[in-house]
Length: 368
Picture: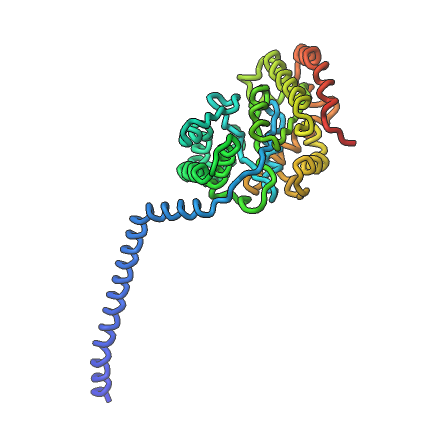
């Protein structure tokens, strides 16, 4: 009995040894294969990037929709309104302030069709996207929250040049369509890329202040729209002073800029009529539903509840909380912002702005 057991045990030992050796060798080979595969994958990453570029270039949708420009003085709701448009299925919402101005931010870029397409791209390219790629999109310099912004500037250039190269003839509108096509095509994390779009929306605090800019804008976009946001100067100055104390610490300078922007709004409305609408910032806060219903009709898009929620790339932003805070501020009696003014500041604002503020209120869309 013991002898037979010992024989079996001797027969089993080599088998177990071979099996263990097989496991060890097999595991080692699998490990070596995995390392080889990963090394090969890393070495081929550049090839994958080329494949990604090719796929994006082959599947980029042309963006030929007109531009709806949002114009306001600093701190008067331009970024908020832009975030309310974000996510609407019929809108390409440019996610940050439009910075195609050249050679300075406040100048509409002049494109010479005799220049090289590479030069056109250099003029229009918005440098700020490089910062957002590295650091994420931030709502403002005083806000810690950031959003991922996956964007490839080199891909944008390729898309732009391909669009230009494929156009049978080139007009000014084609250059700007090529830019918008390249911008949204290179924004890889954009969650609202697909679908038929009626407008591209973007906000600016400066481009619409100069007559020559608007003449060029409507020459390129005869089907474009301009939405201007007017804010009560008694609320505007304290807000601007709080956010940009170095620039708006002096009430005289702040009032001068406010008057300049309102004068531009009146000129734009008189000159371009139905293509321009004026809304009150305070209504945007307290009558958001009515304002966004009106603006949906103004742009010819279907109303969607997404228009009531400020988002960045369909992700909720802190603007909703700021909206409630501003709403409480402006609706208190007397307005809290007004109580933050000195008597001298309040008198200066009333004296310098009351007449033109009455004029612009006649052009503002009103709601019961």
